[in-house]
Length: 161
Image (cartoon, rainbow, N blue to C red; front, side, top):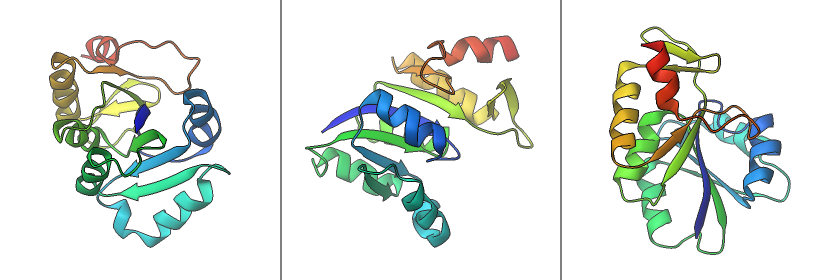
């Protein structure tokens, strides 16, 4: 199994992910990881509809994703991991999933978050988690689309603080 890309995007699968990101990173499987989504039948149906033609889809809880990614269940696949939030991505990494870099694509502004760029708003917990992962050597960028520069998310956080 090869994790070809990892992305935090609260919209999970949508036009940019389905068409642009998936093709750019060369994924043949999208893996959506979130503990709430696995219990939301409407969200699951929406993800199945949004899945790009010819691509495989796995929708997993964080614990099940860690298990499946470590036991080789997707050994033949080029996996694009997508989480709905920073916390879920951190749990995958902390659980031993070999994600060395990820991209934060879209997190809308909510009460208690700070906008660091037009498409990304982070909570204090998100910022603390990102800083911890950066110190551990994880590369984290903030890109909406692949042709946007791969600027470290720390640059955006530092400018916003």
